[in-house]
Length: 615
Image 1 (spheres, one colour):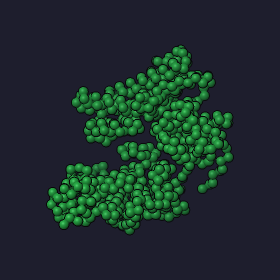
Image 2: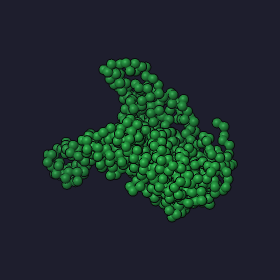
Image 3: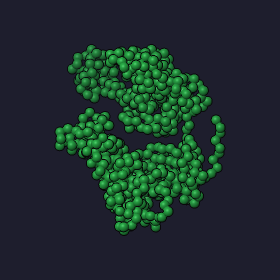
Image 4: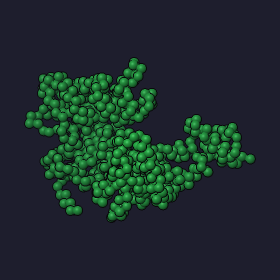
């Protein structure tokens, strides 16, 4: 590989944070991108000083060099005190470096192309939240909205989601059944009945509610009248707020440029057209311009202005920042060798098979899984031994994966507390893209190696912990980033995959921090449906995770004979099971078992030990 030329030009850092994500862009004076990545949300009003500093420190750790100047715009930086607080936090991370600390509205306006004629401008922002912010050429400002999803943020994704929730419940009350929008929302949230929306809505985070806007737009596109009305009302509110903001800046009849930004507008062309038409009707002298450049470039422009050095608008591909996946793993040739990517010769006529034969084919393929796993029993046993040591010393077990692999890890982790009365934090699942990825794909999440490392960093793994990366193909960057960080922190690491080519590839790794200490690689062969790793690979993953946690919990005393003596009897079925467990183990009558459980607060193992001492 040809070595990279040293960076000699000054670097300008832009940071823009909101309720969904933080975007980072570093550009040199020649317009070359030095770093371009995203991390978690950053709303200043919702962050403690400690959280803010950690957030900025994480960003600094991923940069290729120290910046010459910095521009930071975070949502929630409303007052001068807020901006001072943000500036102080940045100064601790980047001491003696010039910094503009402001809000994400200013950075978005600064990203708009400079017009030949200086016009008053109003930024019309609709993303997770919403706001209208205006500035005149002489520096006068005005702001409408942007006060959070409870009392503000009209026509934001969150507001659209909230309005949709209320509308579908009203529709249910009036019509006696859910309409298409209500059905789609239940499906999106994976609920079985409308009443489940009530407790969820009480505790749902802003971003969770905002995610429902996607369902509203999709349902409206199919012609649903309720969804279309919600979006039409939202477009009217957004245009109304924008015109009100303009009216605070300049007299009616003045030409004003409205800059449109945010995912709700830019990702939904029909909605953006509706807003544009309403703006031109409400403000006849309106010039409407969608923001074509990433708004984080405005933060870079603000940083550049501190040194008065010209910087070109960058359209070049960014250089890698932070961790870079080793070439031997990143090589797509390794992926092409994976059985998960190859065609199964036995299922070439899958689309024409009668159902009975299709069932037989899939079951016969699944029958190959146990033997493939049995061949990996030594490696699995080694991992179980390490997990037992971790549990005995106060350590934890982490699963890390993306897509189906990540969901299976989260599933196994979620089953441990009720099954073994274990602390929730003892076994944890980490999925690329976070909670949303449990029910819908998060674009690009699995390809972010740095995000995997940061996820492990935030969980604060140490030498007492075990981390198992799960990747059907074996090359998921998010998983490898997590493995690297876990090795760096001294944790025990293992990789579970279904691509035998990963064994020789792993041996070629030069840096030991990239090497998992154990490789578990059952060769289950090609999937019946080519590339669909939720099939044999998914089944095999569940079997291996079952082996690891069940045997580990057994070895630490959570099982007597073959009974779950630490089960958490949280419902009628489990309480009956707890009584039967005590009766089977001790031979006592059911009434005595129930009485002892009542005395011990339904802690089965404690009741068992008490009964053993009973004469």
